[in-house]
Length: 310
Image 1 (cartoon, rainbow, N blue to C red):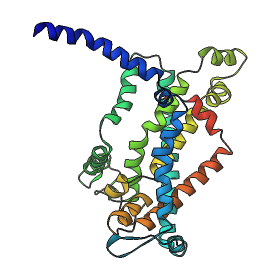
Image 2: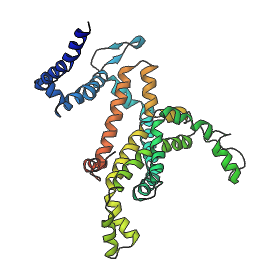
Image 3: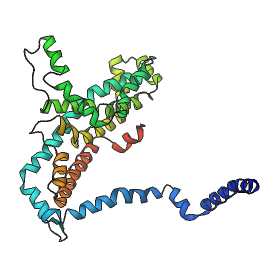
Image 4: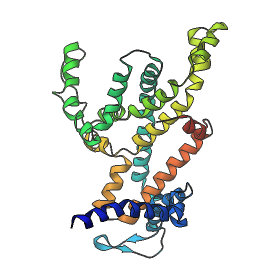
């Protein structure tokens, strides 16, 4: 019995090696490992679902959530004629722009400081930025409810400073939603800026100062242009995430803070109108792509993304 076990154990590595050689010699397996196979994965997990959404947008919903598979433009006509959905999308884009403009100066300042600092505390500070990703977004968003409430930390601090005489309404308002959204998305601005600024050669900056440039001019003409790829990447991340946010408007916003993501979820899961939800999704994606295209006319997005390493 023991000899049979020993023989089986000795044959196992040989079998594994034989299987490995067969796989490496297989053309199909080699294709799956080749870079070109990435196109197949993109096709399966991106374009195929997107094709389903596009197809659904040309059908119409029947009773009890059924789908009537008859080509129609009814969903697109409903969107064009329904100003409420146009206002929701416009408001979502506006929230994305406002949040990005708020996050940009704070994120760039913190990312620049972390990237240029040689302090032994830098890894700890960077860790405090990254640690947010260890906590689920829903928990981080819920944490703002006791902070922004009438008896929360923000109101207590304002009362202590004497800025207000009584608690103010911050929670369930547009300001509270933007505040919570900005803090949650801040790392997506800090990290791209940090990754670029930390790679800037100090000798280049010193050379500019040697030629007579002041600190401000060296920053304006050397450091800032070299950090532009990180800025562009941060803007892309923060705008897309904030404009399509779901949790912040649901948990922190007021009744009038209806953004497109919660609206699409309502149409999809409560109204069971999958075709119209698909239409809203496509229209919003098309607008985002259009905005990014216009932005790319002013900033080389491809070069910026290639220059950013996260």
